[in-house]
Image (tube, rainbow, N blue to C red):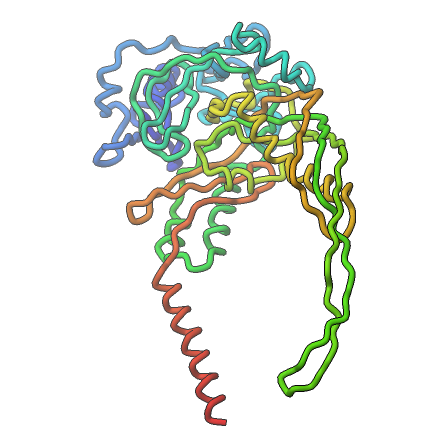
Amino acid sequence: MQITINRDGENHGPYPLEEVQRLLANGAVQESDLGYYEGAANWMPLKEIPALKSSTNLPPLIEKNAPPVIDESQEVKKKSGPATFPCSGCGGDLIFSPGAAKMECPYCGATVECPAPTGQVFEHDFESQLSSLESGAVTTTVTEVNCEACGATNQLEANATSGECAFCGTPFVQQPKSANVIQPQALLPFSITRDEGIKLFREWIGSLWFAPNKLKQFARDIEKLKGLYLPHWTYDSDTTTDYMGERGEHYYETEHYTDSEGKSRTRQVRRTRWYHASGRVWLKFDDILVPASDTLPRKYVDELEPWDLQALTPYSDSYLSGFQSESYTTDLRGGFNIAKDKMAPDIDEKIRWDIGGDEQRIYSKNTYYSDITFKYILLPVWISAYRFKETTYRFLINARTGEVQGERPYSWVKITLLILFILAVIGTIVYFANQK
């Protein structure tokens, strides 16, 4: 159950039932504050919400005036997946503040510096990792729920069994499962805030051609925008490619012909001579980026590029506080197969350059991959899904650059009117041309 809290005219949340229970116990919110949950007829005092009225096992109080700091002695709630960081002032969960190296309490406003990430961002050997995966090395356990509506794999907060799918907005209430996955090595923290994301979405909707008028109305009303870390693989590899093909060289011949008036004329006609070609080319690839999930249409995820991968930060749970993340569904080997497809055009271009001539044909090629390394990283997006005329549309915002991509409906009325207008213009031009 998710509850949205209205305090002093501002909405906060939604938050899981257990979180609201703790906030009430700590005094961070009052029983008289208004709350709303899906299915409720209207806003009501928190004390009137049935699930809260029947709650008896509230968590212990945390001293309200304790200094808001995080250090070795502060409790960090460990879970299957990222940790959460309780505010020592009111007990609420701290959330990462985009664009700043700090976490903020959404209840009392306290801020703390994010713990400094430890370690360095570096690649791991691909073959060694494949060999060790079966033994569970370099893996972590996460708690996840598969959305029955869209198939997304959502990672859950501590002890949660319900929530809302970050990809399609479908509520779920089911028993989560545990899975052993590779621990992310690095991430790009959010730098665009939620409010900035809403503004970018509205600008994007407003710029769409042939969009239904009601869609632009939706852009003014949107509030459901969720921060999500998408899993990605990056691959480095040296490649050696043996190829066979042909090199085409142009030459010109003089051709005699008779024109429409019966006169004899000549013209230069281009011909091509083909010669056998074979050889070997070498290429080195760095940071070939592959989405590690097929939940979202890959064409939209790819269009969010480029990412500033040079700014990757060593993984730290503090950056995930307040955000959702998805586990990878494309495994390490499958991701590299996709990376091969992304390398192929560059390899073909190098082969054509090596063949030379005016034209090139590639009949066969055999590529060997060596010194393969990888990173498993998380990239930040703002995501939302909305229904328009019984169809669900999703959009994504690159939370580093502000690039917006997504699905959208079309107004066939507007398109039809445009076609009719174009036909009318063409008809008018033809009419006056015939009059002359």
